[in-house]
Image (cartoon, rainbow, N blue to C red; front, side, top):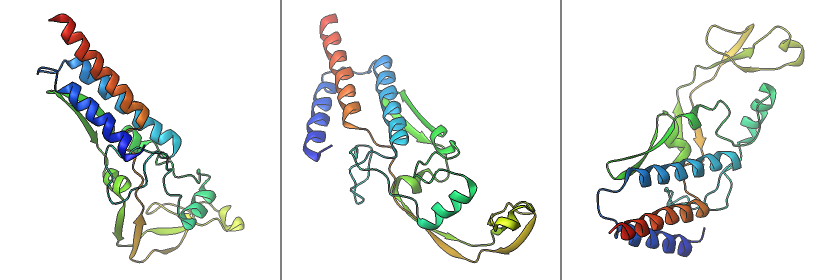
Length: 200
């Protein structure tokens, strides 16, 4: 979405919201929350839909750019584990299921109950203390030299532990609203204004 088209849509929404007398109907808030939830789900399904502006990431950063690809070493590790090598942010479903969008007290709230929700949205660097064990998970892995990270105390043979290191996580904004969904929000607000006028 271009910055101009977004501003035009947001301006139109704000103008119409200004014509609604508080309290805003709960049904309107629920409809808007549902649209935002659908938009966020699309971001996961499409591997990102943002404008690529790393210096100004927000809810209204919708666009056509995909998320940054996984690092080569991560791809290699995922390949040995049989995981997708795409940056889906959805390998174990934990982040996606931690998102809640709801309307309350005249506002729409978005919450992410995940300890790593923020770093995936805005990016950052983790100072990892190390100490993660790696080795052969099963005896048969020795023949194929399949080495992977192990849960502490588990696995067939521990080969060593990682030392202190930094993990760089690129921004992969998933809490953004696409232009199509913004237009749907505009339509909901517009209908609410028309209904409100008709009821007077």
